[in-house]
Length: 361
Image 1 (cartoon, rainbow, N blue to C red):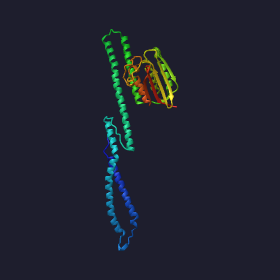
Image 2 (image 1 turned 60 degrees about the vertical axis):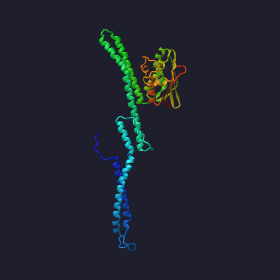
Image 3 (image 1 turned 180 degrees about the vertical axis):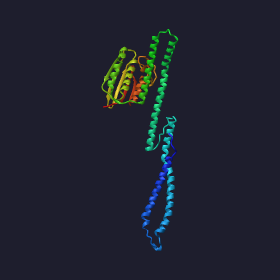
Image 4 (image 1 turned 180 degrees about the horizontal axis):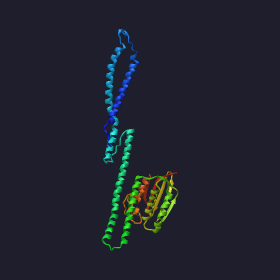
């Protein structure tokens, strides 16, 4: 926006200080005049034969008053300029930080020292805004990088299949169409998972009262056929555990946890237990599965996007887990709901995942 040049805030404050000081001096002189000089008699002789009449006092007082007013005006301008500069120094820091942010440097922070006042509150709010902006920009960059990296393979496969169909008209079209359908479905699932991961990281959702026990039962019912196919016993135990959040995201969170527990429960014939309970002001969800022994150093990497440990099994049954996004999405959703996620390898093999969310009465 184009603006015509005007007076700086420092000059305005300086003129205000000087003007206020000049007005205060003028009022003081007016008080002297009204309440002192007006009572001085105009008699020809005063005390001890001296005649300090009003005329003489006025002619003596007015020049001195004019000099005093001039001094007050100069003192007010100089002092106001220095005081305004000192008081506006924090605003200069904030302005410099805003310019750097406008030029793309979101990592800069003001971190203004001193006791709390209006400028320091503004500085803290600005630092918080920069931190959120940097986080959102980094999330978008990660999303773009992950999407471009992971979508490259299915798109390349699709192009290869189309080239084969174009160069070899005698090839069975049904087989190509089926393979294209599988690759396209996988790319769509991956995109939806990435969008869900980004949405959970931003925390942009409407909150409502949700019972984790009902969510757990729904997720278990959905994944029961997969568990039966792999000869996995799937149990849901515990009681009501209410929290505030997005029912859709929490359902995806529980589904991913149960799905991960079923798919990586090797060898077949193991168990998966989903337990919910309310512990004071915290709602707890536990998903425990049997399976192979997990090295302790592998567990922290399970929640990182596209990081597949040596014990993780790639599967095409459920792309959300096989693509290395299952537990990453869970972690993102838990953080967006102000909760905590703990992964502990079981001594007998398998994994115990505990989600703690703020509870509701």
